Each structure stands twice: as C-alpha cells, then as structure tokens.
Image (cartoon, rainbow, N blue to C red; front, side, top):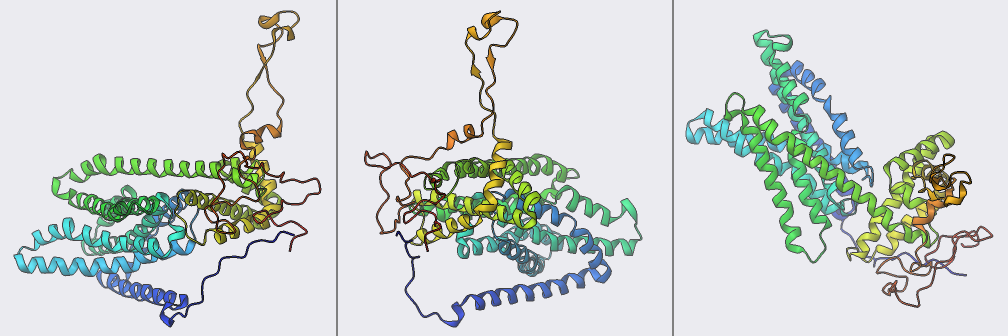
Length: 494
C-alpha cells in the first residue's frame, strides 16, 4: 500500500528564551499598548476631554469603509486578520507617537535656530512631516515583509498592508485635528457649517479620507514588486522599497505644501494629482487582482489531473462571482459553517496555486512539499461541503456553449434561408461541456511531483517527454481516490 511521504523535519536546535514566539508576541503587544497609552494622553492633553471625544466620534466614521475596501481588494488570497490588526495598531499607536514627538521636536529646533516660527511651521509641514510620518508607517510594512513573508507575496498584499497601516495613522491624526478644531469653536462660539470643526471634517474625512493610505500605498507597491522579484534580482529587490518610500514622501510633501500655492492651491493639487493618482492606483490593484485570478485558473488544472480537484473547480475558483455564489449556496444549504468551509476551501486552493507558481519560478524553499501537502490535505477534508457549492457556481456563471451550425437541409421548406427556422440552432445545455477547457493535463499524473522538491528530492519530469503518463481517472468506479505518494487519501489508506 502506498504511503504518504513524511513531512520535512528540521534538525532540533536549542532556542534562547527571547527567540520563542510568545516572547516576541508579548513584547510587540506591550510596545503597542504603551504607545497607545502615551498617544492617548498626548492627544487628550492637546484637545481636552470633550474635544477628544468629539474627534474620536468623527474620526472613526471612515475607518470601517477603508478597512472594508482593502479587505475587498484582498479577497482573492486574503491574509490573516492578525496582520491587519497589527498594521492598524502600529499606524494608530506607534507610528502616530513617533510622528508627534519627532515633528514637534524638529519644528521647535528649526524655530529656535532660525528665529522664524512661521517658516519653521511651513518647513516642518512640507519637509519634516512627510519624511518622519512615511518612514514610521513604512516600518510596519517592513516588519510584515520580513517576518510574515508567506503572507506577503505580491503587489496586492503590499497595498493592503500599507493601506491599513495608513488608515490607523490617519485615524489618530484625525482625532487630533478634529478635537483641536472643536476646541477652537468652543472659544470662538462658532456653530454649524461655518465652524472650524465642520470645515476640518469636510476636508479630512469627506474629501480626502484616502490621502494617507494613498501615500503609503506607494511604499507597499515597492515592497510588493520586490516580493515578486526572483532571488537573482537582488539589486531590484533592494532598490524598489526605498524608491516607493521616496515617492510616498514626495506626494505627501506636495499635499502638505498645497496651502502655500495660493487660495486655490489645495483644490488644484487635489484635482491635478490626488484624484488621478487614486484612480491609477485603483486600476493597478484591480488589474493585479485579475492576474491573480488568472494564476488560479492556470495552476489548478494540474491538481485536477492528480485527482485533488474536480474539473469544474479551476473555473469557479478563478472567478470572484462564482466564489460568491458558492458561499451563498453553502450558506443556504449548510448554514454559516458551510459558508465558512467554502471560504476556507477557496483560500486554500488559491494558496496552493500561488505556491505552485512560485515553485515553477524557483522561489520556494525546502519546505515546499510539506506546505503543499498541508494545503491539499485541508482541501480534501473540506471537499464534501465545498464541491457541491462550486459545481453549482460553475453552472450558474459559466458562459453558454456556442451555437452549432445547422445544415440547410434541416429546413425542408426554405433551406438555409427559409422562413421556418434560423441559420443556426442552439445546442441544449450540458454541464459536462463546461469541463472541456479544464480537462486533466496529461503531463501531470498522481505519481509526478508538483514542484522542484519531489518525494525523493528529484526534479520534476519533463512534461513533453514521450514517456509521460496520462493521469489516472480521479473518479474510479468504486469511488476511491487516486493512489500514489501525492494522491488524495482514499478510504483504504491510513
């Protein structure tokens, strides 16, 4: 009986106490908590209790919308929530604290050195603040890139991580600005639309809630392209993140300096730079997401040939509409747990497709076999709930087959141009016709390795050699799964 290859094990190595995960997590949580307490005290001191509460209530309004937007962009291969929570906390606490302390110190030093407080404020807003704030936010992107490398695989991941970090930073900054504006209105007695609070809310929350995310997303794109670069492109991987950071600083400086361009400088910069940049980056992210769906459709047929997936699944998993219909179908027939199972199935299938693509490009380590096997095992355990939902989604979203030409003699009274029928007749819908583009590929059999690390360390077979074997039928007459070292576990296997 064939047995599954053992998971790769690492040699036992003694780890020091500071290298243990719980120590690192504890230190990080403690750092963020202390930063949050300090920033809370500083903001409350500058705005007062009432101003802080008013600023908090107004600043929280755009946060759910921005988080939902970034989560929507990450729907193809969603990252774990703990990464987003860390990024938001870093932006709202650590980055905001660094920015407040560094900006205040630098502005005071420049004012003392030049004896020009007005010029110091302008220089601090246009030069010091962009450098300090973008560097502080980029630190979160760098930490995720270094320590959560498996979750940081491309441009979309960089955009999401950077955008959520900037959303947290903007949240704290809006509390400060709105609370200060409310305090000013309390002193002047202004109310309603003519108040400073209303004007600040309109500019920062209504017109430009995406300002800080837009700046930091440029840094995230630099890290994302670096993540896509192969190992041999070391110069590119080293230069792209700093280049993205410099672009973020430049756009931030242009935005902060718009007030110096005259009475209508803000609106000119907003219309000429901010809106076009926002539209261009939105198009880039959506285009990248469509390419990720194309990767799913291109890589998963190999697992269809090996028997892990059904022929309809690559199409369904490569369409966001089909994925949504599958989750809705599972929710109707299996409840919330069924919908979660389908979502988990979709995430695992996407991850294994991206893993296979990185393996073909030579960007995986020695743990490739174990990671791939773990993902495939997760798919196999969720198949009973997910496969009917994905089959339903395929039937609901697949395009109809093309019409079949009908010969002229099919119309006895008028021929091809007769009055009793069209030139072509539709073909009755057949579910199996949907599977034709995704038929199992001959080069990939259940005994062939999925990447550069096979069960015995051999390189994969050449798919174009004359000795390649066709795959076994994943649906055997007795309902057993395919056998072999890389085949799904059947009912007679341990």
